[in-house]
Length: 199
Image 1 (cartoon, rainbow, N blue to C red):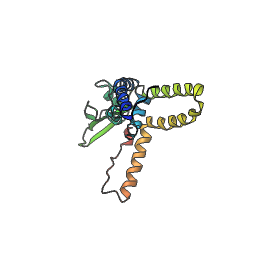
Image 2: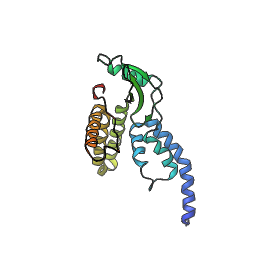
Image 3: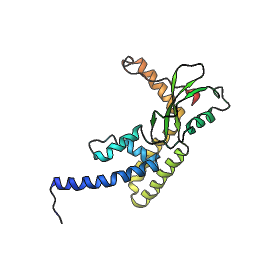
Image 4: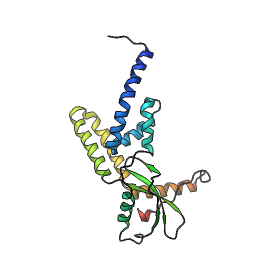
């Protein structure tokens, strides 16, 4: 066995991180969903992960690469509004997302006759299916090799699946906004008013 000092061991680990970090980053951005969600979570652990990983994992919080092509998000929104009173109300749409995360992206828009700029959260096509398939695949393998981890992962799955329901998210945002406005932080914290009817 080779005995290394802490400094020597750290140097060797750093070379491994330098080599493997870009490979793992590429895989996370390609696989998306569950993997970006985990990168988001792990990016909060500055005390645990090497900086070479943290540098790109922190992008997963709001600057992940988008999978949606130019015009695709707007088409998704227009399709969801067809047959409603809001069908032709989008007057301005900014194609550059202001934030991209694990399952979708956020865009700016304005509605006809309204000077307010709105933030529109658009779920990427197939995001939910990919996420569900990824977790089910992991659960399948855990049942074979580490069954003690199945129950915790199922709980993670249950909580993550709630994120695909944007209407519930908007209603929760409205409830939090009301609580903040009624509390002592009303003058320091501002929460946007969701338009639940457009979800």
